[in-house]
Amino acid sequence: MNPARIESRLRELLEAGALAKSTSSQELVSFVAPLLDSGVLAWERSGAGEKLCVRNAETLSSFILDRFPFTELEMEAEISRRVASVGRFRNTKTLRSDTPDIVTVRGWSDMALWHKGKPVVVSEATRKHAIFSFALTPDSRYELRTSCALVENPAVLLGFERFTIQSEIPLAIFAGGRVSHRLLDWLASQTASSLHVHHFPDYDPVGLSEYARLQGRLGDRTSLHLPVNLADYFARFGNKELLRFPATRRLLAKLRSVPIPEVCAVIDLIDRHNAVLEQEALLLRLDDCQGASRPGVA
Image (cartoon, rainbow, N blue to C red; front, top):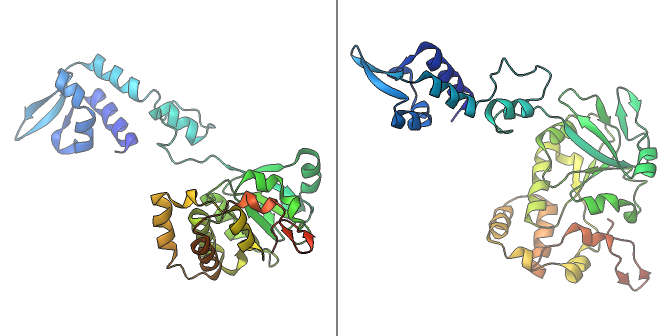
């Protein structure tokens, strides 16, 4: 059902008093079924066909107002579509959103993120406030000029220093689970030859599926973070329960046909341990023969 089209036809019906049956779609007829049942609207003969007639204009007007509080012309031009969608249809998702993405990063170099040709002082914001955020619009002037991490979960983002790899990866971007289309488009549009996106997801079917999606857009400009001791983390902290969900099993089966070496390597670990690994585990230190190891690094 297209709410905007329904609204337009209802207002036309109210103004004209009738609509030809040939121009009354099935979705419109279904929408006004309560009005037909109550006699507010009725079918009447019109030549060789029928027309939908208004029997009670006041009730029809109330019906329209109840479902479509504001017309398109009554909405303020400067408000976002998400707000307008509530005003017109009582549902934020009816109109396609134009709300900017809020991109949250942490940085340890002021040469990583640039805006309008000038470097952004991300390191100071990270030091003082732990994070830096900006609004990503379709015509955004922000650009990346170095390697970065795309981190799925907030705990790993906030604990990223424990990896001690800031010299190689001086910027971490919060993915928030599934990367938004706009953020992915922005990453794919970057032109700096030094850019490489290191993906830090959960080591489970959802995380691997997301990495495959990144690969599809970024190609060899992205890689999956695979610590050399990842198998040890699986053995010590892998979660068997999370692998038992039917949806997880179905997604895992689909991923077996994905010809990406990193995905295959993690699936091998999942099979070997019959478990998945949440990325927060990498912030824990494993003891090895040389003493306390660094958290999970490549």
